[in-house]
Image 1 (tube, rainbow, N blue to C red):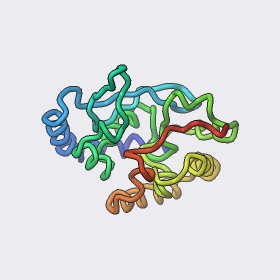
Image 2 (image 1 turned 120 degrees about the vertical axis):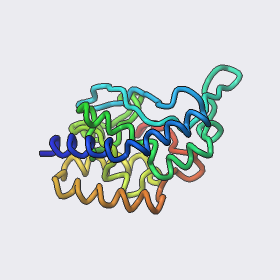
Image 3 (image 1 turned 30 degrees about the vertical axis):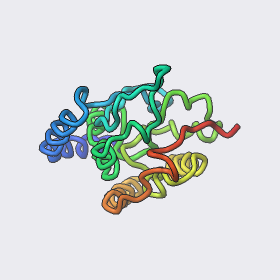
Length: 196
């Protein structure tokens, strides 16, 4: 049933938001150039990697040694607005259609975090990652990594259709309020460094 809802929801979402997706693509092209979409390898179901797509929100600015500048220095005003309203996440509906993600589940995180999880935190990969999740409606990026990962595991242990519907409804409320967009003193969220 969850997969049927994911397919229906993502398909309808892509159709309904098609004009918004086109408009945002044009705006990003004018502000940041090509590419309009940002693709990154993330951890999926059972820790299997997949390519998650989002709208691009940052400049490709590098330091003298060739490494990317901090997020705060690369984030553009347009990118900040896209993130505030979670509009940069809309292309992920395509990942949902492909079966790599779900509408609701723990957010897919970076591959480099895999060896840092505790055995309990690894349980977040027992379900498909989501466009939104329990941690996103309970603090988003304003809570610590241990809290966020514990919320992910709580979702895995308590998931149900009704919980998913509740999370979707509360996500809409969170987006409107622009709550928990970033951690204190960060443009987004500091990197996870494990429990050690």
